[in-house]
Image 1 (cartoon, rainbow, N blue to C red):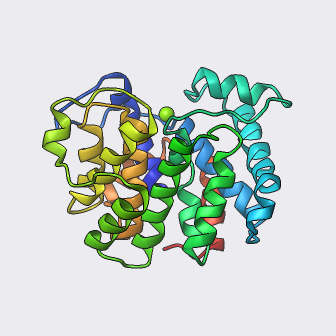
Image 2 (cartoon, helix red, strand yellow):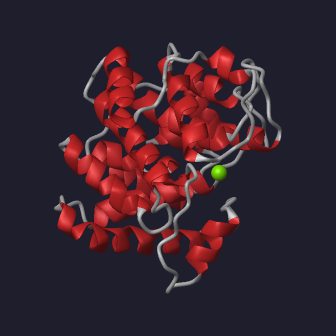
Length: 269
Ligand SMILES: [Mg+2]
């Protein structure tokens, strides 16, 4: 879980100061952003109600996720939320939004860890998207990321994960980071930014190279590193101490506590 939050933190500086340099330095102005806040909201929603649901209950479960999104937005309104999300979160009666951006995918990292089956993982992911990202494109992207985490934490090979995602979600994951990099820009659209974030993991050799791959794409760096880092942690199961040290004192303690509680409860190593 912290793998995603660390990706968000290290990427936060480069979301604004885009870089194509793989060997970028960790900047002292790095901070957690909306990605980490909403991951915390999803941890909380699952801790309050860890039960599995049937497809029939998807809209009532979506309301539980929505309540936590609004609450955590109200706690951290200046964490870098987009205008569309802020408008939605400020209005307790707002209708489900139909964003096609990557915000649905960045926050579902905990769902990839919490459930015993891939089916339930996909249902919960859809429910978590409905309040703000109720579009085919956003749900597909979020489900692809949740599946990657689920498969990675069950020790599936990169080759299997890649083939499964390509077959199920019709993503082309055969491009190389260096070729994507040539034209990649800041664009939060799910179908534009999520496949490169997954490739950043597929082409990595460890946790750190995953987030370096993602950030040096020069795009939506915090969110792409959050996604790549989330999958990488599930796969490699370890994060270098220097990254932990750099990021840990940049996370608000109440976020840290909720995420740690979630990790303990679901016995995530
Ligand atoms: Mg962000």
